[in-house]
Length: 284
Length: 336
Image (tube, rainbow over all chains, first blue to last red; front, side, top):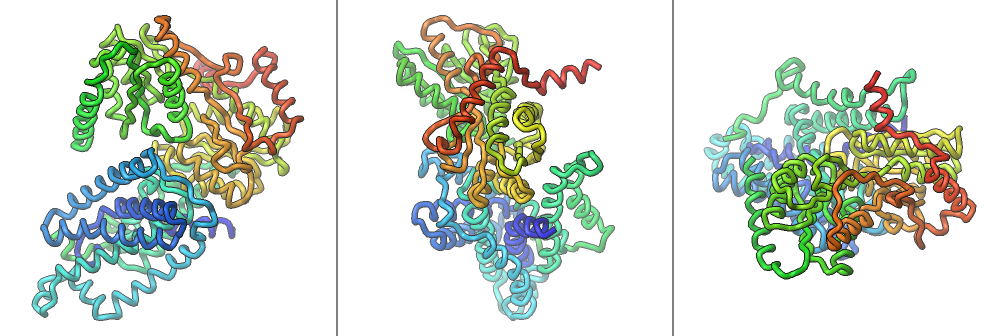
Protein backbone atom coordinates (compact mmCIF):
# COMPACT_ATOMS: atom_id res chain seq x y z
CA UNK A 1 0.00 0.00 0.00
CA UNK A 2 2.79 2.37 1.06
CA UNK A 3 4.65 1.31 -2.03
CA UNK A 4 1.70 2.15 -4.24
CA UNK A 5 1.54 5.63 -2.70
CA UNK A 6 5.25 6.30 -3.21
CA UNK A 7 5.10 5.00 -6.75
CA UNK A 8 2.11 7.27 -7.43
CA UNK A 9 4.02 10.29 -6.14
CA UNK A 10 7.10 9.45 -8.20
CA UNK A 11 5.05 9.03 -11.37
CA UNK A 12 2.99 12.19 -10.71
CA UNK A 13 5.89 14.55 -10.04
CA UNK A 14 6.84 15.38 -13.66
CA UNK A 15 3.14 15.66 -14.52
CA UNK A 16 2.56 18.16 -11.70
CA UNK A 17 5.41 20.43 -12.80
CA UNK A 18 4.31 20.34 -16.43
CA UNK A 19 0.63 20.86 -15.59
CA UNK A 20 1.37 23.79 -13.27
CA UNK A 21 3.42 25.43 -16.03
CA UNK A 22 0.53 24.79 -18.35
CA UNK A 23 -1.82 26.35 -15.79
CA UNK A 24 0.15 29.62 -15.68
CA UNK A 25 0.42 29.76 -19.43
CA UNK A 26 -3.17 28.89 -20.32
CA UNK A 27 -4.68 31.10 -17.64
CA UNK A 28 -2.79 34.02 -19.15
CA UNK A 29 -4.64 33.30 -22.36
CA UNK A 30 -2.28 31.23 -24.51
CA UNK A 31 -2.86 27.57 -25.44
CA UNK A 32 0.19 25.43 -24.63
CA UNK A 33 0.39 22.17 -26.44
CA UNK A 34 4.16 22.66 -26.23
CA UNK A 35 4.47 21.35 -22.65
CA UNK A 36 6.09 18.22 -24.08
CA UNK A 37 8.74 20.22 -25.92
CA UNK A 38 9.60 22.41 -22.95
CA UNK A 39 9.87 19.35 -20.72
CA UNK A 40 12.20 17.74 -23.25
CA UNK A 41 14.59 20.68 -23.72
CA UNK A 42 14.86 21.30 -19.98
CA UNK A 43 15.48 17.60 -19.28
CA UNK A 44 18.24 17.72 -21.86
CA UNK A 45 19.78 20.88 -20.36
CA UNK A 46 19.68 19.46 -16.83
CA UNK A 47 21.42 16.22 -17.79
CA UNK A 48 24.00 17.84 -20.07
CA UNK A 49 25.04 20.63 -17.69
CA UNK A 50 25.07 18.31 -14.67
CA UNK A 51 27.28 15.85 -16.53
CA UNK A 52 29.68 18.56 -17.72
CA UNK A 53 29.93 20.54 -14.46
CA UNK A 54 29.34 17.72 -11.94
CA UNK A 55 26.87 19.97 -10.16
CA UNK A 56 23.15 19.16 -10.15
CA UNK A 57 22.43 22.74 -9.02
CA UNK A 58 24.05 24.25 -12.10
CA UNK A 59 22.17 21.65 -14.11
CA UNK A 60 18.90 22.72 -12.54
CA UNK A 61 19.63 26.41 -13.20
CA UNK A 62 20.42 25.58 -16.81
CA UNK A 63 17.15 23.65 -17.07
CA UNK A 64 15.19 26.61 -15.71
CA UNK A 65 16.86 28.97 -18.17
CA UNK A 66 16.40 26.63 -21.13
CA UNK A 67 12.82 25.80 -20.11
CA UNK A 68 12.03 29.49 -19.73
CA UNK A 69 13.65 30.25 -23.05
CA UNK A 70 11.82 27.48 -24.91
CA UNK A 71 8.54 28.80 -23.57
CA UNK A 72 9.66 32.31 -24.48
CA UNK A 73 9.92 31.20 -28.12
CA UNK A 74 6.28 30.12 -27.93
CA UNK A 75 5.39 33.39 -26.16
CA UNK A 76 7.21 35.49 -28.73
CA UNK A 77 5.57 33.71 -31.65
CA UNK A 78 2.06 33.90 -30.22
CA UNK A 79 2.04 37.17 -28.28
CA UNK A 80 4.37 39.37 -30.29
CA UNK A 81 4.19 37.83 -33.77
CA UNK A 82 0.51 36.87 -33.33
CA UNK A 83 1.07 33.39 -34.70
CA UNK A 84 -1.63 30.75 -34.26
CA UNK A 85 -1.16 29.30 -30.78
CA UNK A 86 -1.62 25.67 -31.78
CA UNK A 87 0.73 25.90 -34.74
CA UNK A 88 3.33 27.69 -32.64
CA UNK A 89 3.03 24.97 -29.99
CA UNK A 90 3.57 22.26 -32.61
CA UNK A 91 6.58 24.16 -33.93
CA UNK A 92 8.13 24.31 -30.45
CA UNK A 93 7.53 20.57 -29.94
CA UNK A 94 9.15 19.75 -33.28
CA UNK A 95 12.14 22.00 -32.56
CA UNK A 96 12.59 20.33 -29.17
CA UNK A 97 12.31 16.81 -30.61
CA UNK A 98 14.85 17.67 -33.32
CA UNK A 99 17.31 19.87 -31.47
CA UNK A 100 17.85 17.67 -28.42
CA UNK A 101 19.22 14.64 -30.32
CA UNK A 102 21.23 16.95 -32.58
CA UNK A 103 22.92 18.74 -29.67
CA UNK A 104 23.41 15.42 -27.86
CA UNK A 105 25.18 14.10 -30.93
CA UNK A 106 27.40 17.17 -31.20
CA UNK A 107 28.40 16.96 -27.54
CA UNK A 108 28.45 13.23 -26.87
CA UNK A 109 28.88 11.71 -30.32
CA UNK A 110 25.56 9.89 -30.35
CA UNK A 111 22.05 11.24 -30.75
CA UNK A 112 20.32 8.76 -28.46
CA UNK A 113 21.51 9.66 -24.98
CA UNK A 114 23.85 11.76 -22.88
CA UNK A 115 26.44 10.14 -20.65
CA UNK A 116 25.28 8.72 -17.33
CA UNK A 117 25.56 10.88 -14.21
CA UNK A 118 26.85 9.12 -11.07
CA UNK A 119 24.33 8.79 -8.26
CA UNK A 120 26.29 11.15 -5.99
CA UNK A 121 25.79 14.00 -8.44
CA UNK A 122 22.05 13.59 -8.81
CA UNK A 123 19.11 15.13 -6.98
CA UNK A 124 17.17 12.98 -4.59
CA UNK A 125 13.79 12.49 -6.21
CA UNK A 126 12.10 12.99 -2.80
CA UNK A 127 13.13 16.66 -2.63
CA UNK A 128 11.65 17.42 -6.01
CA UNK A 129 8.50 15.46 -5.21
CA UNK A 130 7.99 17.57 -2.09
CA UNK A 131 8.50 20.74 -4.15
CA UNK A 132 5.95 19.44 -6.66
CA UNK A 133 3.39 18.86 -3.92
CA UNK A 134 3.83 22.36 -2.45
CA UNK A 135 3.82 24.09 -5.83
CA UNK A 136 0.06 24.00 -6.57
CA UNK A 137 -0.74 25.69 -3.23
CA UNK A 138 1.92 28.35 -3.80
CA UNK A 139 0.57 29.03 -7.26
CA UNK A 140 -2.95 29.16 -5.90
CA UNK A 141 -1.90 31.86 -3.43
CA UNK A 142 0.09 33.69 -6.07
CA UNK A 143 -2.57 33.71 -8.73
CA UNK A 144 -5.73 34.21 -6.70
CA UNK A 145 -4.43 36.32 -3.80
CA UNK A 146 -2.01 38.83 -5.35
CA UNK A 147 -2.50 41.73 -7.73
CA UNK A 148 0.00 40.22 -10.11
CA UNK A 149 -1.97 37.00 -10.21
CA UNK A 150 -5.23 38.77 -10.84
CA UNK A 151 -3.65 40.52 -13.79
CA UNK A 152 -2.66 37.13 -15.13
CA UNK A 153 -6.25 35.89 -14.80
CA UNK A 154 -7.50 39.07 -16.46
CA UNK A 155 -5.08 38.60 -19.37
CA UNK A 156 -6.67 35.20 -19.90
CA UNK A 157 -10.30 36.07 -19.44
CA UNK A 158 -10.61 39.68 -20.56
CA UNK A 159 -7.48 41.21 -22.04
CA UNK A 160 -9.47 44.23 -23.25
CA UNK A 161 -10.50 45.07 -19.68
CA UNK A 162 -6.86 44.78 -18.61
CA UNK A 163 -5.76 47.13 -21.38
CA UNK A 164 -8.44 49.64 -20.33
CA UNK A 165 -6.92 49.79 -16.87
CA UNK A 166 -3.56 50.61 -18.40
CA UNK A 167 -1.81 47.22 -18.08
CA UNK A 168 -0.31 45.63 -21.17
CA UNK A 169 -1.76 42.11 -21.52
CA UNK A 170 1.14 41.25 -23.83
CA UNK A 171 3.65 41.96 -21.08
CA UNK A 172 1.66 39.93 -18.55
CA UNK A 173 1.57 36.98 -20.92
CA UNK A 174 5.28 37.14 -21.72
CA UNK A 175 6.13 37.11 -18.02
CA UNK A 176 3.61 34.44 -17.11
CA UNK A 177 4.84 32.19 -19.88
CA UNK A 178 8.53 32.59 -19.08
CA UNK A 179 7.74 31.71 -15.47
CA UNK A 180 5.69 28.77 -16.72
CA UNK A 181 8.73 27.58 -18.70
CA UNK A 182 10.81 27.56 -15.53
CA UNK A 183 8.17 25.61 -13.60
CA UNK A 184 8.05 23.00 -16.37
CA UNK A 185 11.87 23.05 -16.32
CA UNK A 186 11.75 21.56 -12.82
CA UNK A 187 9.87 18.63 -14.34
CA UNK A 188 12.75 18.22 -16.79
CA UNK A 189 15.24 18.29 -13.93
CA UNK A 190 13.27 15.55 -12.22
CA UNK A 191 13.12 13.35 -15.33
CA UNK A 192 16.79 13.41 -16.33
CA UNK A 193 18.77 14.08 -13.14
CA UNK A 194 16.65 12.80 -10.28
CA UNK A 195 14.63 9.83 -11.48
CA UNK A 196 16.85 8.74 -14.37
CA UNK A 197 20.60 9.19 -14.63
CA UNK A 198 20.81 10.66 -18.12
CA UNK A 199 18.84 12.18 -20.94
CA UNK A 200 17.55 9.74 -23.53
CA UNK A 201 15.91 10.78 -26.77
CA UNK A 202 12.18 11.46 -26.41
CA UNK A 203 12.38 10.44 -22.76
CA UNK A 204 9.32 12.55 -21.90
CA UNK A 205 7.26 9.85 -23.69
CA UNK A 206 4.09 11.93 -23.94
CA UNK A 207 4.06 13.22 -20.35
CA UNK A 208 3.55 16.80 -21.58
CA UNK A 209 0.32 15.78 -23.26
CA UNK A 210 -0.83 13.84 -20.23
CA UNK A 211 -0.16 16.95 -18.12
CA UNK A 212 -2.26 18.99 -20.53
CA UNK A 213 -5.06 16.45 -20.15
CA UNK A 214 -4.72 16.72 -16.38
CA UNK A 215 -5.03 20.50 -16.68
CA UNK A 216 -8.27 20.14 -18.61
CA UNK A 217 -9.50 17.49 -16.20
CA UNK A 218 -8.68 19.91 -13.36
CA UNK A 219 -10.69 22.58 -15.13
CA UNK A 220 -7.75 25.00 -15.34
CA UNK A 221 -7.55 25.37 -11.53
CA UNK A 222 -4.34 24.59 -9.62
CA UNK A 223 -5.58 22.36 -6.80
CA UNK A 224 -7.98 20.20 -8.88
CA UNK A 225 -5.25 19.95 -11.54
CA UNK A 226 -2.85 18.76 -8.86
CA UNK A 227 -5.37 16.14 -7.78
CA UNK A 228 -5.90 14.97 -11.34
CA UNK A 229 -2.12 14.63 -11.82
CA UNK A 230 -2.10 12.40 -8.75
CA UNK A 231 -5.03 10.49 -10.21
CA UNK A 232 -3.14 9.90 -13.47
CA UNK A 233 -0.07 8.87 -11.48
CA UNK A 234 -2.17 6.48 -9.42
CA UNK A 235 -3.64 4.88 -12.53
CA UNK A 236 -0.12 4.30 -13.85
CA UNK A 237 1.14 2.96 -10.52
CA UNK A 238 -1.86 0.65 -10.13
CA UNK A 239 -1.32 -0.61 -13.61
CA UNK A 240 2.29 -1.46 -12.72
CA UNK A 241 1.21 -3.32 -9.58
CA UNK A 242 -1.58 -5.23 -11.31
CA UNK A 243 0.63 -6.31 -14.21
CA UNK A 244 2.73 -8.59 -12.06
CA UNK A 245 -0.06 -9.64 -9.66
CA UNK A 246 -2.56 -11.95 -11.31
CA UNK A 247 -6.03 -11.75 -9.76
CA UNK A 248 -7.69 -15.18 -9.46
CA UNK A 249 -5.13 -16.52 -11.88
CA UNK A 250 -5.95 -13.97 -14.55
CA UNK A 251 -3.79 -10.99 -15.39
CA UNK A 252 -5.79 -7.79 -15.57
CA UNK A 253 -5.83 -6.22 -19.04
CA UNK A 254 -3.53 -3.30 -18.28
CA UNK A 255 -4.47 -1.42 -21.42
CA UNK A 256 -7.95 -0.96 -20.02
CA UNK A 257 -6.58 0.55 -16.84
CA UNK A 258 -4.18 2.75 -18.82
CA UNK A 259 -7.06 4.11 -20.86
CA UNK A 260 -9.27 4.80 -17.83
CA UNK A 261 -8.02 8.34 -16.96
CA UNK A 262 -8.47 9.43 -20.56
CA UNK A 263 -12.00 8.11 -20.72
CA UNK A 264 -12.83 10.07 -17.56
CA UNK A 265 -11.22 13.19 -19.08
CA UNK A 266 -13.29 12.74 -22.20
CA UNK A 267 -16.43 12.55 -20.07
CA UNK A 268 -15.39 15.74 -18.29
CA UNK A 269 -14.76 17.49 -21.58
CA UNK A 270 -18.14 16.69 -23.08
CA UNK A 271 -19.73 17.85 -19.83
CA UNK A 272 -20.99 14.66 -18.21
CA UNK A 273 -19.02 15.33 -15.04
CA UNK A 274 -19.17 19.05 -14.29
CA UNK A 275 -18.30 21.53 -16.96
CA UNK A 276 -14.77 22.35 -18.12
CA UNK A 277 -14.51 25.87 -19.49
CA UNK A 278 -11.18 27.07 -20.87
CA UNK A 279 -10.04 30.66 -20.17
CA UNK A 280 -12.14 32.93 -22.37
CA UNK A 281 -9.36 34.60 -24.36
CA UNK A 282 -7.46 31.38 -25.13
CA UNK A 283 -6.61 30.85 -28.77
CA UNK A 284 -7.18 34.50 -29.58
CA UNK B 1 3.41 14.57 -42.95
CA UNK B 2 5.33 17.74 -43.58
CA UNK B 3 7.95 16.71 -41.10
CA UNK B 4 8.41 13.38 -42.83
CA UNK B 5 8.69 14.96 -46.23
CA UNK B 6 11.24 17.43 -44.94
CA UNK B 7 13.21 14.63 -43.31
CA UNK B 8 13.25 12.73 -46.58
CA UNK B 9 14.62 15.68 -48.48
CA UNK B 10 17.31 16.35 -45.91
CA UNK B 11 18.13 12.66 -45.82
CA UNK B 12 18.41 12.23 -49.56
CA UNK B 13 20.45 15.41 -49.88
CA UNK B 14 22.88 14.34 -47.20
CA UNK B 15 23.15 10.91 -48.80
CA UNK B 16 23.81 12.43 -52.22
CA UNK B 17 26.48 14.74 -50.86
CA UNK B 18 28.09 12.06 -48.75
CA UNK B 19 28.16 9.37 -51.40
CA UNK B 20 29.25 11.27 -54.48
CA UNK B 21 32.91 11.15 -53.49
CA UNK B 22 33.25 7.43 -52.90
CA UNK B 23 33.98 5.92 -56.28
CA UNK B 24 37.25 4.12 -55.58
CA UNK B 25 37.85 0.43 -55.94
CA UNK B 26 36.73 -0.62 -52.45
CA UNK B 27 33.41 -2.30 -51.85
CA UNK B 28 30.80 0.10 -50.59
CA UNK B 29 28.60 -1.09 -47.76
CA UNK B 30 25.50 0.79 -46.65
CA UNK B 31 24.37 0.32 -43.08
CA UNK B 32 20.84 1.45 -42.25
CA UNK B 33 20.17 1.52 -38.53
CA UNK B 34 16.70 1.82 -37.06
CA UNK B 35 15.39 4.32 -34.54
CA UNK B 36 17.62 3.07 -31.73
CA UNK B 37 20.68 4.66 -33.30
CA UNK B 38 24.32 3.63 -33.19
CA UNK B 39 24.68 4.26 -29.48
CA UNK B 40 21.66 2.43 -28.09
CA UNK B 41 24.27 0.38 -26.18
CA UNK B 42 22.41 -2.58 -27.52
CA UNK B 43 21.23 -3.93 -30.84
CA UNK B 44 22.16 -1.17 -33.30
CA UNK B 45 25.40 -0.53 -31.44
CA UNK B 46 26.38 -4.16 -32.05
CA UNK B 47 25.62 -3.91 -35.78
CA UNK B 48 27.65 -0.72 -36.01
CA UNK B 49 30.54 -2.37 -34.16
CA UNK B 50 30.62 -5.29 -36.60
CA UNK B 51 30.54 -2.99 -39.61
CA UNK B 52 33.30 -0.72 -38.27
CA UNK B 53 35.43 -3.77 -37.59
CA UNK B 54 34.92 -4.82 -41.20
CA UNK B 55 35.89 -1.33 -42.32
CA UNK B 56 39.15 -1.55 -40.38
CA UNK B 57 40.04 -5.13 -41.28
CA UNK B 58 38.57 -5.65 -44.74
CA UNK B 59 39.04 -2.16 -46.16
CA UNK B 60 35.47 -1.61 -47.22
CA UNK B 61 33.88 1.80 -47.58
CA UNK B 62 31.18 2.09 -44.92
CA UNK B 63 28.31 4.54 -44.98
CA UNK B 64 26.01 4.57 -41.96
CA UNK B 65 22.61 6.20 -41.83
CA UNK B 66 20.45 6.42 -38.72
CA UNK B 67 16.75 6.90 -39.24
CA UNK B 68 14.86 9.21 -36.98
CA UNK B 69 11.54 7.61 -37.86
CA UNK B 70 10.28 4.44 -39.50
CA UNK B 71 9.04 6.18 -42.64
CA UNK B 72 12.50 7.30 -43.72
CA UNK B 73 13.85 3.73 -43.71
CA UNK B 74 12.76 2.85 -47.23
CA UNK B 75 14.12 6.02 -48.89
CA UNK B 76 17.45 5.34 -47.18
CA UNK B 77 17.64 1.80 -48.57
CA UNK B 78 16.53 2.96 -51.99
CA UNK B 79 19.17 5.69 -52.11
CA UNK B 80 21.86 3.16 -51.23
CA UNK B 81 20.65 0.87 -54.02
CA UNK B 82 20.42 3.67 -56.56
CA UNK B 83 23.98 4.63 -55.71
CA UNK B 84 24.90 1.03 -56.58
CA UNK B 85 26.09 -0.09 -53.19
CA UNK B 86 26.74 -3.83 -53.67
CA UNK B 87 25.84 -4.65 -50.05
CA UNK B 88 23.15 -2.98 -47.99
CA UNK B 89 22.57 -3.92 -44.37
CA UNK B 90 19.22 -3.16 -42.74
CA UNK B 91 19.10 -3.50 -38.97
CA UNK B 92 15.88 -4.15 -37.10
CA UNK B 93 12.60 -5.94 -37.78
CA UNK B 94 10.89 -2.65 -38.63
CA UNK B 95 12.87 -2.64 -41.91
CA UNK B 96 11.35 -5.91 -43.16
CA UNK B 97 8.79 -4.39 -45.53
CA UNK B 98 11.19 -1.75 -46.76
CA UNK B 99 13.82 -4.38 -47.59
CA UNK B 100 11.27 -6.58 -49.36
CA UNK B 101 10.18 -3.74 -51.64
CA UNK B 102 13.63 -2.35 -52.39
CA UNK B 103 15.23 -5.80 -52.89
CA UNK B 104 12.59 -6.61 -55.51
CA UNK B 105 13.31 -3.36 -57.34
CA UNK B 106 17.08 -3.84 -57.29
CA UNK B 107 17.64 -7.58 -57.83
CA UNK B 108 21.37 -7.11 -58.40
CA UNK B 109 22.04 -5.50 -55.04
CA UNK B 110 22.68 -7.70 -52.02
CA UNK B 111 20.83 -7.08 -48.79
CA UNK B 112 21.28 -8.23 -45.24
CA UNK B 113 18.20 -8.07 -43.03
CA UNK B 114 18.79 -8.41 -39.33
CA UNK B 115 16.05 -9.68 -36.99
CA UNK B 116 13.43 -10.49 -39.61
CA UNK B 117 13.05 -12.92 -42.50
CA UNK B 118 12.04 -12.63 -46.12
CA UNK B 119 12.12 -14.99 -49.12
CA UNK B 120 13.77 -12.70 -51.69
CA UNK B 121 16.83 -14.47 -53.19
CA UNK B 122 19.11 -11.44 -52.87
CA UNK B 123 18.42 -10.99 -49.16
CA UNK B 124 20.37 -12.67 -46.40
CA UNK B 125 17.97 -12.75 -43.46
CA UNK B 126 19.64 -13.17 -40.11
CA UNK B 127 17.59 -14.04 -37.06
CA UNK B 128 18.69 -15.15 -33.64
CA UNK B 129 17.45 -17.82 -31.28
CA UNK B 130 16.80 -15.31 -28.52
CA UNK B 131 15.15 -17.98 -26.39
CA UNK B 132 18.42 -19.92 -26.11
CA UNK B 133 20.42 -16.91 -24.95
CA UNK B 134 17.64 -15.91 -22.57
CA UNK B 135 17.62 -19.45 -21.17
CA UNK B 136 21.30 -19.08 -20.25
CA UNK B 137 20.89 -15.76 -18.45
CA UNK B 138 17.74 -17.09 -16.79
CA UNK B 139 19.72 -20.01 -15.41
CA UNK B 140 22.47 -17.67 -14.21
CA UNK B 141 19.91 -15.37 -12.57
CA UNK B 142 18.37 -18.30 -10.71
CA UNK B 143 21.83 -19.33 -9.45
CA UNK B 144 22.60 -15.78 -8.30
CA UNK B 145 19.23 -15.11 -6.67
CA UNK B 146 19.04 -15.42 -2.90
CA UNK B 147 15.34 -14.62 -2.61
CA UNK B 148 14.30 -17.04 -5.38
CA UNK B 149 12.32 -14.21 -6.94
CA UNK B 150 13.43 -13.06 -10.34
CA UNK B 151 12.12 -10.23 -12.45
CA UNK B 152 11.55 -9.67 -16.16
CA UNK B 153 10.89 -6.19 -17.58
CA UNK B 154 10.09 -6.35 -21.29
CA UNK B 155 9.95 -3.36 -23.62
CA UNK B 156 7.05 -3.45 -26.04
CA UNK B 157 4.69 -6.37 -25.68
CA UNK B 158 5.41 -8.16 -28.99
CA UNK B 159 6.00 -11.84 -29.81
CA UNK B 160 9.78 -11.36 -30.01
CA UNK B 161 10.00 -10.15 -26.43
CA UNK B 162 7.59 -12.93 -25.36
CA UNK B 163 10.16 -15.29 -26.87
CA UNK B 164 12.83 -13.77 -24.59
CA UNK B 165 10.44 -14.13 -21.67
CA UNK B 166 9.60 -17.79 -22.25
CA UNK B 167 13.27 -18.72 -22.70
CA UNK B 168 14.24 -16.76 -19.60
CA UNK B 169 11.50 -18.33 -17.46
CA UNK B 170 12.42 -21.83 -18.52
CA UNK B 171 16.08 -21.09 -17.73
CA UNK B 172 15.11 -19.99 -14.23
CA UNK B 173 12.90 -23.04 -13.65
CA UNK B 174 15.59 -25.36 -14.99
CA UNK B 175 17.85 -24.36 -12.09
CA UNK B 176 15.21 -23.74 -9.44
CA UNK B 177 11.70 -25.07 -10.12
CA UNK B 178 10.37 -23.26 -7.05
CA UNK B 179 11.57 -19.82 -8.08
CA UNK B 180 8.95 -17.27 -9.15
CA UNK B 181 9.37 -14.93 -12.09
CA UNK B 182 7.56 -11.56 -11.97
CA UNK B 183 6.85 -10.14 -15.39
CA UNK B 184 6.12 -6.59 -16.49
CA UNK B 185 5.98 -4.86 -19.84
CA UNK B 186 6.75 -1.16 -20.29
CA UNK B 187 3.93 -0.70 -22.77
CA UNK B 188 2.16 -1.73 -25.93
CA UNK B 189 3.36 1.03 -28.29
CA UNK B 190 6.82 1.81 -29.67
CA UNK B 191 7.22 4.42 -26.91
CA UNK B 192 7.98 1.42 -24.69
CA UNK B 193 11.51 1.20 -26.15
CA UNK B 194 12.50 4.62 -24.88
CA UNK B 195 10.74 5.17 -21.59
CA UNK B 196 13.43 4.64 -18.92
CA UNK B 197 11.32 6.43 -16.30
CA UNK B 198 8.53 3.89 -16.58
CA UNK B 199 10.96 0.98 -16.77
CA UNK B 200 12.67 2.19 -13.59
CA UNK B 201 9.31 2.35 -11.84
CA UNK B 202 8.50 -1.21 -12.92
CA UNK B 203 11.90 -2.41 -11.73
CA UNK B 204 11.53 -0.63 -8.38
CA UNK B 205 8.17 -2.27 -7.82
CA UNK B 206 9.67 -5.69 -8.56
CA UNK B 207 12.68 -5.10 -6.30
CA UNK B 208 10.31 -3.99 -3.54
CA UNK B 209 8.47 -7.29 -3.88
CA UNK B 210 11.70 -9.10 -3.05
CA UNK B 211 13.11 -9.66 -6.53
CA UNK B 212 16.91 -9.51 -6.57
CA UNK B 213 17.75 -10.02 -10.27
CA UNK B 214 15.97 -8.39 -13.23
CA UNK B 215 16.42 -9.16 -16.93
CA UNK B 216 15.30 -6.37 -19.21
CA UNK B 217 15.11 -6.72 -22.99
CA UNK B 218 13.61 -3.26 -23.52
CA UNK B 219 15.94 -1.17 -25.69
CA UNK B 220 16.80 2.24 -24.24
CA UNK B 221 14.20 1.76 -21.48
CA UNK B 222 16.56 -0.82 -19.96
CA UNK B 223 18.74 2.05 -18.74
CA UNK B 224 15.97 2.78 -16.22
CA UNK B 225 16.23 -0.78 -14.90
CA UNK B 226 19.98 -0.27 -14.32
CA UNK B 227 19.21 2.96 -12.45
CA UNK B 228 16.77 1.07 -10.23
CA UNK B 229 19.40 -1.64 -9.60
CA UNK B 230 21.85 1.07 -8.55
CA UNK B 231 19.32 2.67 -6.22
CA UNK B 232 18.37 -0.63 -4.58
CA UNK B 233 21.84 -2.20 -4.85
CA UNK B 234 20.45 -5.33 -6.49
CA UNK B 235 21.34 -7.09 -9.73
CA UNK B 236 20.24 -6.53 -13.31
CA UNK B 237 20.91 -8.45 -16.52
CA UNK B 238 21.76 -6.64 -19.76
CA UNK B 239 20.54 -7.49 -23.22
CA UNK B 240 21.68 -7.67 -26.87
CA UNK B 241 25.09 -6.02 -26.40
CA UNK B 242 27.48 -6.57 -23.54
CA UNK B 243 26.18 -4.07 -20.96
CA UNK B 244 28.24 -5.27 -18.00
CA UNK B 245 30.18 -2.00 -17.93
CA UNK B 246 27.13 0.24 -17.58
CA UNK B 247 26.93 -0.29 -13.80
CA UNK B 248 29.97 -2.40 -12.88
CA UNK B 249 29.28 -4.89 -10.12
CA UNK B 250 25.51 -4.62 -10.48
CA UNK B 251 25.08 -6.17 -13.91
CA UNK B 252 25.16 -9.93 -13.37
CA UNK B 253 25.68 -10.67 -17.05
CA UNK B 254 24.30 -9.70 -20.46
CA UNK B 255 22.45 -11.84 -22.93
CA UNK B 256 24.38 -11.38 -26.16
CA UNK B 257 22.90 -11.35 -29.60
CA UNK B 258 26.01 -11.46 -31.71
CA UNK B 259 24.83 -9.04 -34.34
CA UNK B 260 28.40 -7.75 -34.72
CA UNK B 261 29.70 -11.18 -35.66
CA UNK B 262 26.85 -11.78 -38.11
CA UNK B 263 27.32 -8.37 -39.77
CA UNK B 264 31.06 -8.85 -40.05
CA UNK B 265 30.61 -12.28 -41.59
CA UNK B 266 28.12 -11.01 -44.15
CA UNK B 267 30.52 -8.26 -45.23
CA UNK B 268 33.41 -10.70 -45.35
CA UNK B 269 31.44 -13.05 -47.64
CA UNK B 270 30.60 -10.11 -49.87
CA UNK B 271 34.26 -9.11 -50.23
CA UNK B 272 35.06 -12.71 -51.20
CA UNK B 273 32.16 -12.66 -53.69
CA UNK B 274 30.55 -15.51 -51.76
CA UNK B 275 27.36 -13.73 -50.75
CA UNK B 276 24.51 -16.11 -50.06
CA UNK B 277 20.86 -15.25 -49.70
CA UNK B 278 18.42 -17.18 -47.52
CA UNK B 279 17.45 -17.43 -43.91
CA UNK B 280 20.07 -17.93 -41.23
CA UNK B 281 18.78 -18.78 -37.78
CA UNK B 282 21.65 -18.38 -35.34
CA UNK B 283 21.52 -20.08 -31.96
CA UNK B 284 24.03 -21.31 -29.41
CA UNK B 285 25.57 -23.92 -31.69
CA UNK B 286 26.06 -21.34 -34.43
CA UNK B 287 27.59 -18.93 -31.89
CA UNK B 288 24.79 -16.44 -32.55
CA UNK B 289 23.76 -15.95 -28.93
CA UNK B 290 25.69 -16.18 -25.66
CA UNK B 291 26.10 -14.65 -22.21
CA UNK B 292 28.86 -12.21 -21.35
CA UNK B 293 31.70 -12.65 -18.89
CA UNK B 294 34.35 -9.97 -18.46
CA UNK B 295 36.24 -8.01 -15.79
CA UNK B 296 33.08 -6.11 -14.77
CA UNK B 297 31.09 -9.18 -13.70
CA UNK B 298 33.91 -11.63 -12.99
CA UNK B 299 33.31 -11.37 -9.23
CA UNK B 300 29.57 -12.03 -9.57
CA UNK B 301 29.93 -15.34 -11.36
CA UNK B 302 31.63 -18.11 -9.45
CA UNK B 303 33.56 -20.89 -11.15
CA UNK B 304 30.81 -23.31 -10.10
CA UNK B 305 28.19 -21.20 -11.84
CA UNK B 306 30.41 -20.98 -14.89
CA UNK B 307 30.84 -24.74 -15.17
CA UNK B 308 27.11 -25.36 -14.72
CA UNK B 309 26.36 -22.90 -17.51
CA UNK B 310 28.97 -24.58 -19.70
CA UNK B 311 27.13 -27.90 -19.26
CA UNK B 312 23.81 -26.28 -20.14
CA UNK B 313 25.37 -24.68 -23.20
CA UNK B 314 26.66 -27.96 -24.55
CA UNK B 315 23.38 -29.69 -23.70
CA UNK B 316 21.45 -27.13 -25.75
CA UNK B 317 23.94 -27.35 -28.61
CA UNK B 318 23.68 -31.16 -28.61
CA UNK B 319 19.88 -30.90 -28.49
CA UNK B 320 19.89 -32.83 -25.20
CA UNK B 321 18.12 -29.88 -23.61
CA UNK B 322 15.21 -28.34 -25.43
CA UNK B 323 14.40 -24.69 -24.89
CA UNK B 324 10.74 -23.84 -25.55
CA UNK B 325 10.27 -21.39 -28.40
CA UNK B 326 7.40 -18.90 -28.19
CA UNK B 327 7.14 -18.71 -31.99
CA UNK B 328 6.62 -22.47 -32.28
CA UNK B 329 4.16 -22.39 -29.39
CA UNK B 330 2.17 -19.70 -31.20
CA UNK B 331 2.22 -21.65 -34.46
CA UNK B 332 0.91 -24.72 -32.69
CA UNK B 333 -1.77 -22.71 -30.93
CA UNK B 334 -2.91 -21.33 -34.28
CA UNK B 335 -3.13 -24.71 -35.95
CA UNK B 336 -5.81 -25.84 -33.50
